[in-house]
Image (cartoon, rainbow, N blue to C red; front, side, top):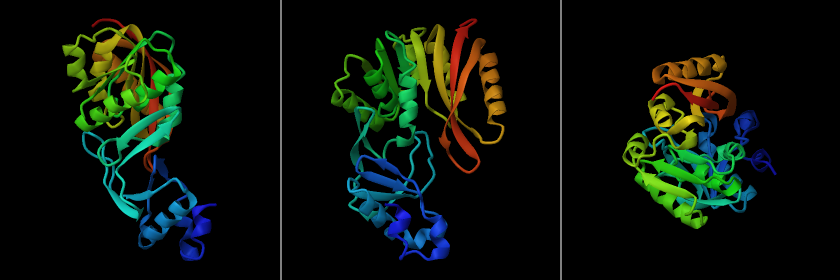
Length: 281
């Protein structure tokens, strides 16, 4: 059953084209974008989601854009009971989180699995903006890395990161660290040890790419996420990689550019898969 079917006698026919056809489900929580044209019907839309998805107990409307250093957004309860903390299941792992206090996107589930399948046995991985550990957990579950260093500076996200490592019994594989990734790498002597780095900070990855350079071995791989314009994004990626290569005096080969979902009508998130070869440190 579709939301449109549930709401066919509630929302006027001329407005049915605005009814959302997709939304995020995180554990017991659904998060939906309500277009301005249907603002007065937001509660009915929320109730329709509850009716269709029996496992969902809470429906939030997105009330702001993602903003701030920790990439958070505001939400408005439109149906069900108010739940902030939940356990989300993905690719065989459990992820506990508070949707209002930490960043998490269920839309990247297949992307996380894609990265996990690239990891060779025995690799050392550094997850530079680990959040609650979503990439690290999936990689540890589906690959055989030697060790994953997961770093995040949001204290609450870090708390969930530690809890999720224990929840999935991955203490011998994932090692969590709280702090700015650049400082953690320097202070804990994690320089030049990574076979693979993950940099999921798409709003400004160039600001943190120094950490990739510091952490990577002489030859390594990196997966860098970035928001780019939909039109001619290949050229934007090319300029971005050229800039990084020149700034840090390293060789960067683009292996693949993977689209990871629309961010707005004009922007898309991409993952740039890179092969790194250091010229000098």
